Length: 279
Image (tube, rainbow, N blue to C red; front, side):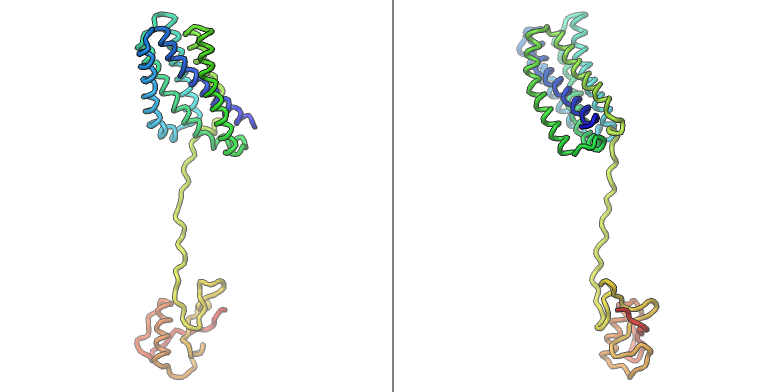
């Protein structure tokens, strides 16, 4: 795969991995810091509800703006929320309110970031020359691996490091996803305007054809040559011929109506003539 596709897959994997680690590590850090099981549940709920709301509302915003910039911004928001917790832990005491506030802030970067990356797929496929179905399949495989490794990595980090260090590592993962997204061409983030779809022209309606005339809708057929007109059956092209009968006049009347000419008012009236016919 080309560099554009590799950068896209790498940033997607890092973003999923950071979110998966944070989803497990943050409640554990709350439990270790506050000692409250209920507090861990409150933080988990406080991050889930805003993420659901952001997923419903941010899709239309991302659809109208630069998807590449939206992906970078979402990862930076997630990284900033975790880094803010780590900074507060360094300078003061972490309380449940801080965990809830930073959890809500980070939730506004998780789901919109995934939405923006999904919207990047067609542009990345065009820029990298990779078939969209192959890119989507590889993306889903990388995301599944990251989602499986995230909880295991969170447990390992919590057993080896303190809570503040785990927050820094998780924030660095989201920040790395934003940096890798910068490797994507700027053109991949521009929204493509919807194509203007027009109704196809209706089919040519079926029109009655006078007896002995050629259907104008048929290939190579026409009612009369340019400048000519249709003659009623039984008449010659130069006007020579006997008197018209009522039957001939009726056929002449239909031909006049077909050609959009004034219809004859009596059997003796002149009927449209045909100078030359085209087969």
